[in-house]
Image (cartoon, rainbow, N blue to C red; front, side):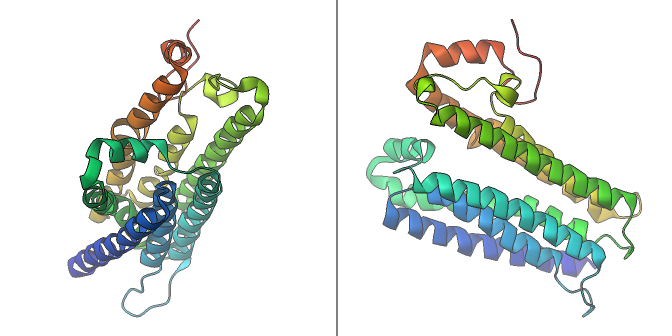
Length: 266
């Protein structure tokens, strides 16, 4: 059994590395780094669904494997399509553009390394999907349905956040203002919060005292929290917002929770 999990880890690592190399090629040829996140999302969905359906001892996928594969596919298609539509309307992603500006002439090489690190750093996410799908019991349990509800709630919450932000930005009266309506009154990044929340589904499905590998799924929400709150999510986005909105965004920061939805300060 251990060999199977190690083989899965190796296959996941190679697949993500190759796909993120493809993302680098697209970014270099188009000059629009927004496609990076699009490809990353679809890559996670593809590799995640494939790993969930990976046959065990030649047996066809069971109900749990199909459930987990469907969940990650729905997540990937929703988020990837949203990012792709957004990317078509911009010339470049300001977060990655800021990195490229810092790197200067060494930008192509540094971007390739950055994207490889992003792909390989995503191994815990896909491995959590693989482990959850491999829970050693064919029949679906209450935990499986609860995990599905958590992931679907995360998808709905993230989609609602994205829709609220789009409506706000599409209103000419809001030009130069900071979105602080709906879920955005409770969190400066409700879309990021719900993205993180959805990854709690896999530990819920996999955790059991009799399934040691299930504890590895905890790495998924831990990694997602770290990447969103401390690396490629909030820090570069808020730096960009401070440059473009200035004191308006500082005021928003002073009264709104950065990540977890909380009542706004007066």
